[in-house]
Length: 50
Image (cartoon, rainbow, N blue to C red; front, side):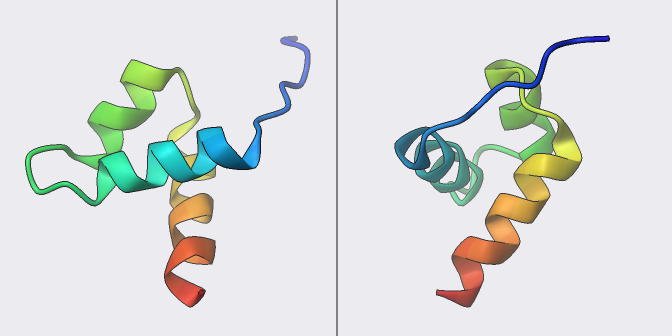
């Protein structure tokens, strides 16, 4: 089992902003940044509620 990683708010924001660019999908960004797809989706949901 992998140890849990802590992501800074800045890292999360950078990842979410990358997914909002029209030329990148959430799946692509999650793979490139080694973030679980579902976790990145949760971050996007939180960002959109702001």
